[in-house]
Amino acid sequence: MEKTRWYKDRVFYQIWPRSFKDGNGDGMGDLWGVYEKLDYIKSLGCGGIWFSPLYPSPGADCGYDIADYMDIAPEFGGMEAFQKVLEGAHQRDMKVIMDLVVNHTSDEHEWFQKSRQRIAPYTDYYIWRPGKPGGKLPNNWDSLFEGKAWTWDEVRGEYYMHLFAIKQPDLNMDNPLVREEVKKILKFWLDMGVDGFREDVITFVSKAEGLPNDYLMPASKGIGLYNHGPHIHEYLSEFQRDVLSHYDCVTLAEAPMVNPKITLTYTTEGPEQEIDMMIQFETQCADCLFSDYMPMPFSLRKLKAAFSSWQNKLRGKSWNMLYMENHDHPRIISRYGSEQFWKESGKMLAACYLFQQGTPFVYQGQEIGMLNWRPESPEMYEDVQTIWQYEHKAVNKPAKKRLQRLWRASRDSARTPVQWDDGENAGFTTGKPWFYVNENYRQINVAQQEEDPDSILHFYRKAIQLRKSLPVVRYGDYQEHFKGSGKLYCYTRTGENQQLLVLCSFAGKPQKLRIPAGFIREKARLILCNYQSEDQRELRPYECRVYLLD
Image 1 (cartoon, helix red, strand yellow):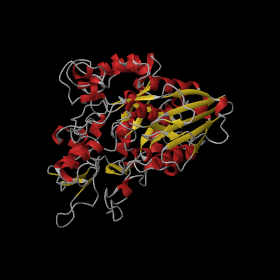
Image 2 (tube, one colour):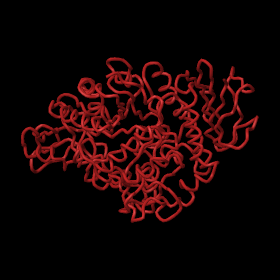
Image 3 (cartoon, one colour):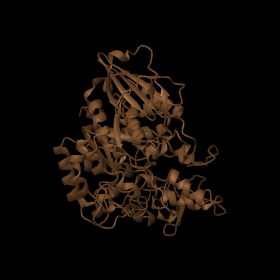
Image 4 (cartoon, rainbow, N blue to C red):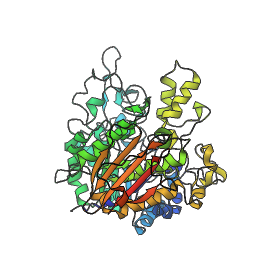
């Protein structure tokens, strides 16, 4: 089937189901709550939804430890609720993409339970190894969540590999039977009418032959030996050839430590294309080194360099996936913006990415400027990675510093319930919420912003509507200006009959207004701004402006 490129003209909304909206009052977000809010999502201008995992799961990693790939968890409403949401989304011309998590399963998955008992054909569905002499682990690789990458299984009498949590054993993708299982999963959901997949750490599924020790990485040992492994292109091509090419669907791959050059080996458009879009991490590293738990001062120059690198190097060859927030990172205003200038920086951060070339994703709560959560105690956190970091890292620092480290880096900051109104539990549930609601919900919520024409929510609506109405956003060339500035991000998009100028101040103090040479501001219209009036001489704190010349 010839794929249409429908995803290039849409904005997606990411739903992390547990915390979006509870529809039945049990305290857990669910698909009945999603169904209630489909018109809200549509009102943002979004033409698609990406669901984080909805499958049955013990919940060791909030749904990313899957026990059954071909069902919907009862707590989310089961298959009946999912089919209702899928139908409702399609009626509103919204696409639906699922999370495909096939690097690992839950240790409670039937495959793992049979594999540990050596029951055919599941014996080699996972990566098992005996220990080395002297009780040593099979190799020196680290997991990304909980210590080393190996755990002893008493039933099998061997170690199993887990690159993430202990309860997330890695599948052995080198086994053709496992790849057939993946194809069955893909076909099951596509036949139901799902429009594509976000593929979780998919570049990890091919490990280096022989699983050798890693002597290069000081931390995260092994990542250079299982990321973009020897058979990754072979396996992704197999999935594409045998299943995905037969459907008009979209695929986006999550890929830690990827750059444009590597990305193009997966996403270059043409007959050999394996993936439609790549979720990169470079634009998430402007205030850290590789990981949110390795903080550094925010650097606008670093952020701009990442934005421009992806815009320029993929141009005409591949398609960008654009995002500022998702379920794996703290809230962006608390990171790159300013809680003091909350409304101004929330709008500016929207403008800085929504007019780039690519398919934008908006994460639940981002559109109302939700902020990081700062609990009083580390025991209040839920996330497996956060808990392990607190118990094993920076343990020599004072308790207050250790807690502040979590405030700064924990994924749970993005996982508090969506703040719908200023009533009990922020309107998320009529029951007892599964997780803590951010205490600022009385000031930051959807209902309040619906009534305020100057709100962040209305700004998102206007910005999304503008990008959809302007051909230059999809087709135009990108050029960054004032690259040396540590305060101003400025770029133009230039098409046949339109030119767009985007100006974004990342400073808490006024900055001199600078217009790129050759852009005739006097002939341009100011079509978007986060202040009520236009100052001719300066940009105010966290001001953004979008000018159109046509």
